[in-house]
Amino acid sequence: MASVSLDTINPKVLKCEYAVRGEIVTLAQALQEELKSKPGSHSFDEILYCNIGNPQSLGQQPITFFREVLALCDHPSILDKSQTRSLFSADAIKRARQILDQIPGRATGAYSHSQGIKGLRDTIAAGIEARDGFPADPNDIFLTDGASPAVHLMMQLLIRSEKDGILCPIPQYPLYSASIALRGGTLVPYYLDEAAGWGLEVSELKKQWADAKSKGITPRALVVINPGNPTGQVLAENNQREIVDFCKKEGLVLLADEVYQENVYVPEKKFHSFKKVARSMGYGEKDISVVSFQSVSKGYYGECGKRGGYMEVTGFGPEIREQIYKLASVNLCSNISGQILSSLVMSPPKVGDESYESFSAEKDGILSSLARRAKTLEDAFNTLEGVTCNKAEGAMYLFPCISLPEKAIKAAEAVKTTPDNFYCRRLLNATGIVFVPGSGFRQAPGTWHCRCTILPQEDKIPAVVSRLTEFHRSFMEEFRE
Image (cartoon, rainbow, N blue to C red; front, side, top):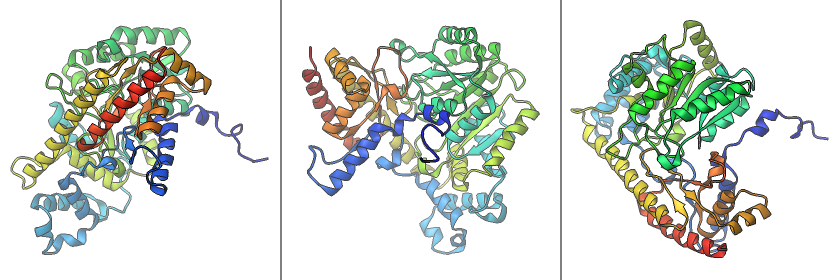
C-alpha cells in the first residue's frame, strides 16, 4: 500500500480549490496538443484562453522602459559599453545605475533584505505618497513574489483555527478561499449585489458578521477586491468610507486587494486606495489596520512571470510587525527582478525624461485597447439569449449571468457536474474558447455565471464574439424546453 494517499495527506489540501487553472484549463491544454499533433482535427484552429489574467501570454508587449532597466540591472557590465547608449534610453541607463547602487554587491542574483531592497522600498513609498497625498513609510513595505504570497502570509498570521473567519466577497477570487482553507480558517461570505452593478452593501457585511458571530466564529478580517475580480466593478469613495467605518467599529483588519488599480475604464469612476480613504477620514495608525496588496502582474504592465508585488502594512504594533517580518524571513526574500519592477511601476518615467513619450504611448495604447475590448465583450454578452452582463468598470474580467434551460441543468446533473461547468465544457469543445465556470468563484445560490477575461488581443476579439454567439444560439436551441 502506498505510504501517501488521499486518506493520509493534509485534509486542508483536499479542501483547497483553484478553478482558474482547473478542469476546463486542463481540457483546453489537451485540445491544444491535439491541434498541434493533428491539424484540422477540430472545427477551430486555436485555443482562445479567456480564463486567467495573464496578458503577455496572449500577446501583450512588455513596457520598453521597464525591460530596458531590468536588462541593464541583470547585465551591468554592458552599462559602460559605447553601444549601450545607442541601444538603451538615457533615463533607463540612469535608473539602472541608481538601482544597482542600492543593491548590496550590485548583484541581482544575490539575496536581499527579507522585506526587499531598502532603496526600492523608498521608491515605492514615495510612489504611494504621490498617489494618495498621505505619507508612506518604506518600513511598512514588504516586497513579495506577486501579491499572492502576501495574501498567504496575512492569512497565516490571522487564522488560528476554524473558529477564525475572514469576510470575503462572493463572487471572490479563489486565492482567498484556497488560502483560508489551507490555513484551516472559515470563509465568511458576503454577497455582492449583481442587480446593483456588483455593489457592496454595508448592511450585507453587518448581516454576515452577525451570522458568523452567532455560530461561534470570530471574524478577523475583511477582504475587499477593488477594482473587482471576477466582477469588474470599481467602488465609489463614499462606499469605501462606509467599509472603513465598519472595519473600525468591529476591529477588523481591512485586506485591500488593489492589484487592478491602473485598470479603470469608465470616466465616472476613479481608484482610491483604502489607506488614502482611511487617512482622509482622520483615521491613523492606531485607529485601523489596513493591508494593501499590489502586483506587477496586472495594470498595463502585465509582468505576471516576473513575480513582483508588495504589501503595505499599516496599523499594526511593533510586536506584530516583528512576527510579520519573521514570516517574510522564512522565505529569505522575493526575487530581485520582481522587486525592481515593483519600484518601476510605482515610479515610471516622468515628463522631461527621454522615455516619457514612448512610455506614455505604450501605457495609453494598452489601457485604451483594454477598455474597447471590455465594451465589445460586454455588449456581445448582453445580446445573447438569457445572458445579462454588468458594465466592465475596471480590472480584466466580465462575469455574465447565464439563465440556463432546465433541460441543460438536468443534462449537467446526469454527468455529475455543475450547469455552468457543463456550459463551459461544451463551449470549449465546440469553439476552443476557455471560460472559467462561475462556481469556481462562488455565486449566489440558484445563479450561474462564467468569468471571461478581456485579454485576447484586439484582433482576436471578433473571433471570440462570433464563436461564442454561434455556440450559445446552438446550445440554447439544443436544450430548449
